[in-house]
Amino acid sequence: MTGLRVRHRKTLALDSTDLVLGTGVHGLLGPNGAGKTSLIRVLATVARPESGRVEMLGEEISDRRGRAEVRRRLGYLPQQFGHYPGFTVREFVAYVAWLKELPAARIPAAVERAVARVGLGDRIDAKVRTLSGGMVRRVGIAQAIVNDPGVLLLDEPTAGLDPEQRVAFRELLRELGGTTTVVVSTHLVEDVAAACTEVTLLDAGRIAYRGTPEQLTLLGEASDGPGDHPIERGYTTALRAHRAAGVREGVR
Ligand SMILES: Nc1ncnc2c1ncn2[C@@H]1O[C@H](COP(=O)(O)OP(=O)(O)OP(=O)(O)O)[C@@H](O)[C@H]1O
Image (cartoon, rainbow, N blue to C red; front, side):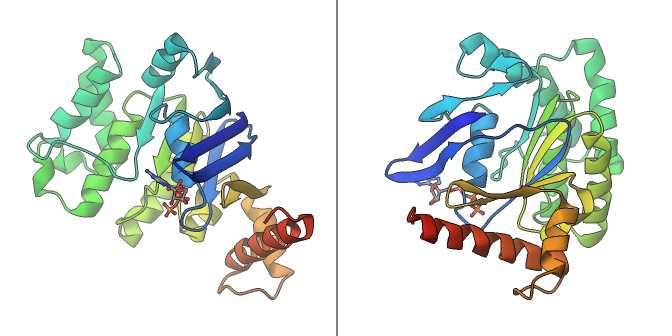
């Protein structure tokens, strides 16, 4: 994406953002309001940028046909995930597979595989309304991966997962990142450390830092900033350095 600018009324949520994302797991970090959801929503083609260009999967998303093609090959878990509580897990994930225009003959097996990958195989015929919050989140992940997406966008996927499920989910992320471009927004720096190949830190609509989790950890080890773990210290150090540079350049 180049020169991406997203505005919500008077608020500039993303300001002239340039970013190239390849195969792997990209962690999007940043304080509340940094612009993570705004970025993911543009990539998911559910929000339009004020300006800038986004090319995904070889298609321009400003182009109607390009957008339609991208939507078929995309997986998206929104922060507020809408579902049909009266559907069973199988019915709901199959419905999304149908929306993504998967060939009908492939849908049953694709649904079973996606549901098994999030550890809900034994609840596949349960009604979504009978599941716990964390399980519903996992249904959200299953519907996002049912079409084996080329780009997978996950907005806070680990919110509400218990520790055991978070660990299992990170393993799934690492597996998916081997062949897919995965973008995960999270507040949990430990998710990034465990599962991401790259980190992008946003602050007030701008990219404050890009690097690997190892680089962010090294930055933290070399600093005495706040944080209980080196990668947390790396996060606060990178954020402070970006803000200090902004003050020096007079952009804030
Ligand atoms: N629908 C909206 N109307 C007005 N302002 C909005 C809207 N959505 C987001 N914003 C503003 O845009 C900015 C970026 O918000 P965004 O939700 O993208 O941040 P975020 O990094 O995802 O935050 P969080 O970590 O809290 O989820 C914030 O200043 C927010 O208040």
